[in-house]
Image (cartoon, rainbow, N blue to C red):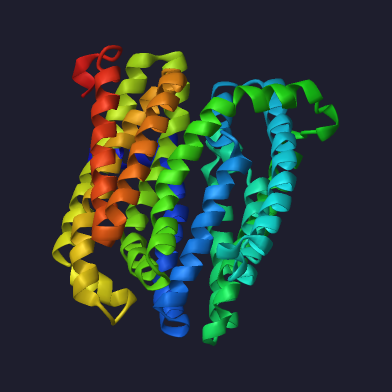
Length: 421
């Protein structure tokens, strides 16, 4: 009987997808554990702070390239997965819009990096990070998520990280090589995403000759609101280290990044888990709401238990966790890490609620709420950072995330059966 249940679980497509997706994302999450101690030992914690600021800026700019495709695009593909004409229209329109955006962004950012004093002092570091943006333009992950092709998402994830690891361990040998680290991240994403892009186009016989200007312009117009909300979310994610670099120094940025590097493993996992669950939630809400809520509750409930246990482990073994990345200022950093464990725990609650907000077409409410909360969050950081430094940033993030959860719950409980919670 037990063997029959195990067989049934293995045959379940959703469980198979979860295993395949988890394999790739597991590799994605352990990559920092392999490279960060090496980077810090070779380049120093201050240069690691510079690298982290450059990476954060690139990740923030990515939002301009995605322009809401990671939310709206995924949903459109998920709902229309059985309609080849609609899929082609969504794919070619989205990539044409992204092409226009990436060209514009590369020109503007190159000028900023060369002539704005804060960036020009590390011009080479920032310019060599531009391939990250090119790789994000090519990235077809949003489409693969919509059709739930997690095998190819896993392939491109592992391939990009293998290229990155190769570049770091083969090419980074002295302190001044820190400017090449973000370049290798970009090379990995460009090569792997190009392979996946070609696979999608050939498999589905998509033709960009069918692109229509009016659809591209319409998408840029309609996606603006969700893009603006994602812009604020991205700003909330990457602003802390940028603000620490501006109001503090590169050493503090390096300390914060070590804390974040530990917690971001779980934060990234939560966002990746969102990417896995979100298309299915959208699809089921369109077909069978009762089944959608049951699916949402099961997967996100188990995920919360995993994050809770993980954060308890990090809290009690914070000193050991920090010492894995650096041998200096261990006690100070580990104390901050214990406070930071609250952030992934709260995110593991807010992200599932975000799934329902977007799945139930509450985009306008989500945009307004996100905008307000991010502005409050950034204002809190600017006020607290000069006096309380990293502690002020962490406290602000915790309070913002907790408030977001309460607001989500307030609006959702009016529309969703109470027992789901």
